[in-house]
Image (tube, rainbow, N blue to C red; front, side, top):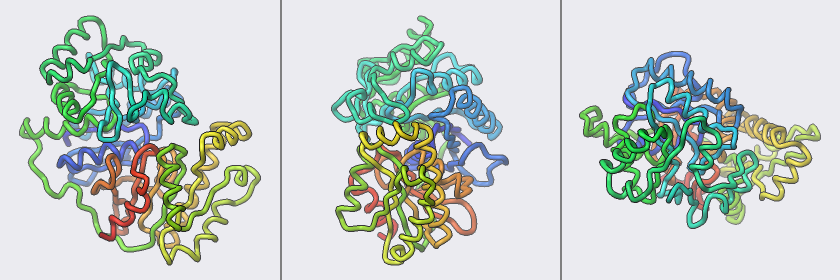
Amino acid sequence: MLLGCIADDFTGATDLANNLVRSGMRTLQTIGVPNTPLAADVDAVVVALKSRTIAAAEAVAQSLAALEWLKRAGCRQFYFKYCSTFDSTPQGNIGPVAEALMQALGARIAIACPAFPTNARTIYMGNLFVGEVPLSESGMRHHPLTPMSDANLVRVLQAQSRSKVGLVPWTAVAAGDQAIRARFAALSSEGVRLAVVDAITDADLHAIAAACADHPLITAGSGVAIGLPGNFHRAGLLPPRADAAELPRVPGLAAVISGSCSQATNGQVAHWMDSGRPAIRIDPFEIARGTDVAARALRQAAALLDAGPVLFYATAAPEEVRTVQAELGVGEAGAMVEQALARIAQGLIARGVTRLVVAGGETAGAVVQALGVEALKIGPQIDPGVPWTATQGAHPILLALKSGNFGSRDFFVKSLEQLDA
C-alpha cells in the first residue's frame, strides 16, 4: 500500500480515487473505517467519511481513526481530501482536521490546495475561483450547509486554524517544484504550518505534487492527486498498469437519485426531464407531514423501471431551499430528505436495480450507508472527478457517486449510456 487517503464525504472520495486510477493506481474506496484488513491487492485506499458538516471535534476523531487504520495498513504517504470549493465554516472542519493529522504524523508543514483546473477550480493569490468568478460570487454562496462568502482561502483557513497560514503564490508554482520547495522552507522559517498553494493549470498540480513527494501529509481537493502516482513511479514503487480501471459488467435495471441543490445538478435534472425521461419529485414538506414519500415514489416507479431508468430528485433552486429550511430547519430538512432518498435506494436494489447514479455528497453518503456498502472498486471516468464504481462481493452493484457541483449538463444520461457502450 502506497497512499492512504481520508475524504470528508463520499463523492469527494470517488473524485480522488478517480484521479488515482486514471494515473495507474489500483484504488479501493472504503465506506468508513474498515473493521478488518483489506483482502484486495491495491496501491491506494480512500477511506470515505461523512465528516464535512458534523461537529469539528467529531470530524477530527473520525479522521484520526481512519489515519490509524491506514498507518497499520502500511501506507507510505497520507492525503486529506476536501471539496474543490473548500466547503467549510469558520468553526471548521478543514483546519482542525488538517492540524490533528499533522500532529499525528509529525508534519512540520502541509499544503492546502483545493484547485482542480479540469473542473474549473483555480487558485490565484490565495483566492479560489469557480470558472471565471470568485468562490464568493459563485453558486456556493447559497450552499445550504456551508455557504462560502469569502474567496480568500488564507483568510478562510486561518479563521478555523490555530496554526499560522501562509501562501505559495503562483510565481513560485510556475517556476517548478524546486521553487515550491524553497517557498515551503521560507514559510516554515516564518512559523507557517499550513500553506495555501496557487494553481491555475494541471501542470501546476504536477509541480505541486512533485514538491510534496517527501511530505507525510497532503491536504487538498482531488486535483493534486493527479501528480502523486508519478512520484511513486519515479521512486520505483509503482509499476505501469493498464488494468487499474477495470470493472465487471453488470446487467440489470438503472435509476438516478439526486439530492444535491447545486447549480450543476439543477441543470442535470432539467436536462433529464427536458429529454422526456421519467422523473419523480421528492417533496420535503410531504415528508414532514408524515407521508411515506419513499414508498409512494417506489410504487410510482414500479411500472416505469422496466422501460428504462427513472430519476428520483429532491433538487431545488436556492430560493426553494431557503423556504424549506426556514420552515423545517436546516439540519432537519436535509436529514429527512437524505433518509427518504436512502430508503428509495434500498427499494430500487430490491426491485432489481444494479446500476445507480447518485448526485450530492450528503445524499451519496446516506445511500451507500443504507445499502450496507463496505468498499468500492474504482472504475472508468464518466466526467472529470466522477467514475463508475463497483461494490465488492458475489453480486456487485455499479454506483456513480457524483459531487453536486460536478458533471456536464447531460451527465445523468451520459453516465448510463456509457455502461451500454
